[in-house]
Amino acid sequence: MKLGLSIRKRGFSLLELLAVIATILILASLLLPVLSRVRIKAQRTKCFSNMRQLGYAWIMYSADNSGVLVESYPVDNPYVWVKGDMTQPGEAQNLELLRQGKLFHYNQSPAIYHCPTDEGVKVEGKQMPTIRSYSMNSFMGRREPGVGPIPVSAEGYVPFFSKETEVRRPSDFWVLLDEDERSINDGFFVTDPVARLWVDFPAISKHRHNYSFALNFADGHSEVWRHRDPRTIQVDHNKTEQFGNTDLQRLANASTVPR
Image (cartoon, rainbow, N blue to C red; front, side):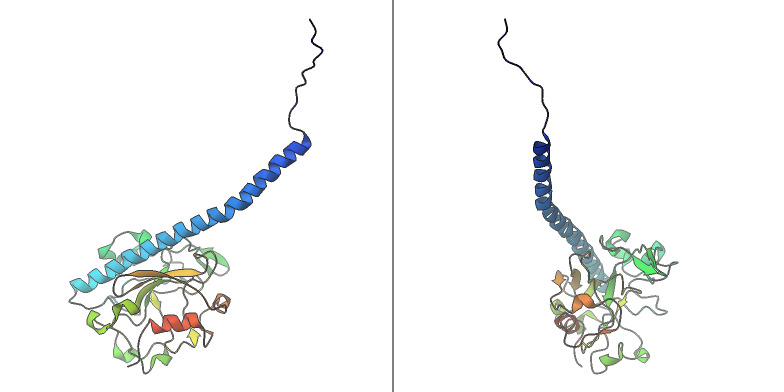
């Protein structure tokens, strides 16, 4: 018996297909920023963890050496915290230079020396992966007085802290930070105490934790600092003059003190 009904097999019409695609694109546009923030947070957390572990190693070294701080001055110095220049192809990936540093004994994981967002340095136009992203405050650890003030503007400031007891407010002074790929070389981070020049500079880019960087302090705590001065993101090479930059001033205030 015929029912007079016809059953028509049908798929999506063009309009329906376009509607589905549009819906997917809208959902993706909503989710991507969320996923990006999650990824940035995860990378920042990893970098923060690296910094804390290196900070613990710094404290343990001092405890084992009667309060003497590990040295940061890298030139012909067997007592330096880490060896290697990240701009030199023969050193940038040499793990042995990490092992020769005085902090490696306290945590023998090379991974804690590298920020997950560090893309490596450019040498002769080519990107070169590096094993280290972090550098030490140049005012931490003794050096021969004959070396003179570093930088020259540090005349009139405490040239270096050689012992734990010399750092009177340890929660105010940083030890290690996440240095920018365009700035990093040795493990000796030079800050201008009068805050006129970015002699070296911390991570300053969107891919490095969205314009922020991790650093640890002499009392063992770590922080993430976000750049606030709009001029900071213009910095792309060492010895950039930006007198009055509040980010530079903040870092200078936490590096050393007047005599």
